Image (cartoon, rainbow, N blue to C red; front, side):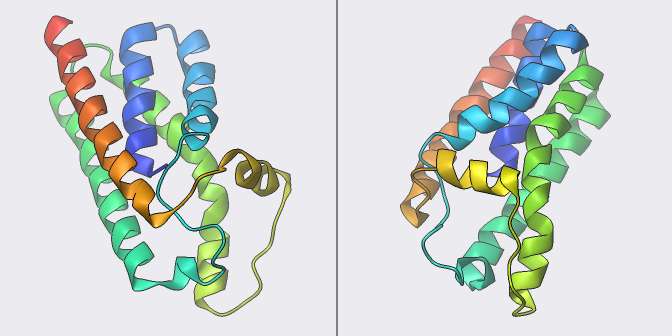
Length: 152
C-alpha cells in the first residue's frame, strides 16, 4: 500500500481513538492490515523498483504524504498531533525498503530480513493494476477524514 494511504489510515485512527496508548499500536497494526489488501506493486519482477513507472508513483506518493503531514501541521485541527504521530507510525514499517531501493538502483544485491520476509508473505496481491485499488482507497479515506473533521 502507498505511504499516503498508510498515513491517512493512521491519522484517521489518531483522530477517532485519541488515546495515544491505544491509537499508536492500532496505527502500527493498520500498516500490516492494509498491506494484506490488494495494492500497487510487482513483487515478481526484481527490477520493478528500478523502473520509471515505480519511481514516478513513488515520487508522487512521497509528495502527497509530505503535503498531507504539512496540512495537518498547518491547519492543526483538534487532536492533530496524535493524528500526525499515528500517520508517521502507520507509514514507518515501509522505511525498511529504503536501503533496498537505493541498493537496487545501484545494481547491488537486495538484502532481506524477517520483516521484509513477513511483508512479502502478507502482500499476496501486489500488481501494477492495484493502483486502481490504491486510488479508490485514497478517495474513500480522504472522504472519511473530511467527515470526521467536520463532525469533530
